Amino acid sequence: MNSNSSIKEILARQAAAKRQSTSVPKPTERSPISPPGSDQAGTSKIASFKLHIPPLPEVCKELAGDIPYALYGDDRIRYTLEQIGSLSDKERTALRIHVEHFLNRMIEVDASDIDFGGTSANKGIWYRLDGDKKPDESMGEYTVDETNVLILNLVSSAQFDLLFKRRAIDISYTMPVEGRDGRNRRLRCTVYFDFDQIALNMRLIGDIIRPLKSLNFHPRIEKGLLFRHERDGLTLVTGVTGSGKSTTLDSIIDENNKDVHGHGVIIAQPIEYMHSSKRCILRHREVGKDVPSFKDGIVQALRQDPDIIVIGELRDPETISAALEVTDSGHKVFSTLHTSSAVESIDRMIAEYPSDEQERVRNRLAEVLKCVISQKLPPKIGGGRVLTKEVLWMTSSSRAAIKNDNTSEIYQMMWEGWAEGQITLEQDLARLVKEGQISVETAMDYANVKRRLRQLLG
Image 1 (tube, rainbow, N blue to C red):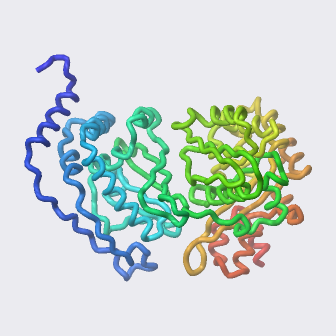
Image 2: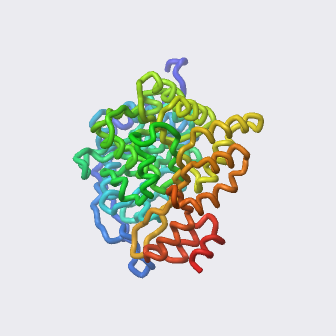
Image 3: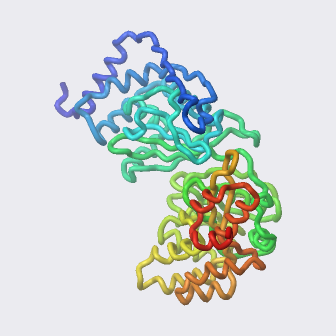
């Protein structure tokens, strides 16, 4: 035995030799568990479909079963990666196809997200339907080592180091299923550590873009979102995860794409919907693949002659500063934030900076901010979800409120600002109640200022 060989190398050779020398057993059919009973209230769509899931590829069971018991934590995950790297293209393809059975199920039941892997998943495959995330028991059970193999097989070698460094990576995935736009379906994915194991969330990216008019913006706002009418300024689309930010942003991009001859640069991590150039030429730059960081993408965009710049998310002060700078240079910029109201969005951006820098940022933001759209997706009566939104259109009064650190005054400005296209979330929720689209209880659950909603509903 070579004394220079590491323990992991020896274990890897032993496991590989074991797989080659062991006769392959007959595949064991993975028996689906019966779907949830109909006695449960609001039987899920999941229970109404039956999709045959082929047996787990034998190579996955062998690889998962051969992982030495003594390895745990990062060593166990690195060992699993090494073993995946030794598989043939045929074996790796079989693992990928098995994951695509999960994704086909996702499309069949019209789920927005899928989650699996890690101890927290309790060996199951989870889907989000109409806002609720539940395990689909008909998909069978998988050990954490099996899901580690299935998930890590989707990660490229260039992404491995980043995964171990950041403990999570955002990637995109394309599956060979044609969508309504004639192109293969794409998913936004996050691979991350979950108590020493690997977990995965995948969100299905829409295959069609909703017309901007279908989002029911006031004509003043709809006009202001178009480059032809407003050629500069920062517009934010905000909301919690799963609130439809990407759908709204894609609608805005598409409307500009059809409306004016220009150049748009989209910087995101990962790139979600791939826009086809129409009247605009639209560039897609994925952070981590096409450009090192959001800041680098924004700075480089200044040398690429853009009219419109789309920043996937304002995640940190560095990205926020770059976004303010590029907007201040006379460009039309769109981005997103994980906040639940227009006022919170402004406060959050300013609070990202140390106290001695906040006055400078406050003044700069007041000058470049054009519009804030904060949205939610409450459940609709009869099933599905419906868009409700709050819209701030910047006026001289709201700019002064930001500069003077009186952002609490902005809510009342939106409440009284219908002529400029403004609306509060509570006013929009009250509209949905009166139209019979959502219940009073749902409206109260989703309201930011419940006292104001009670006033509107009487």
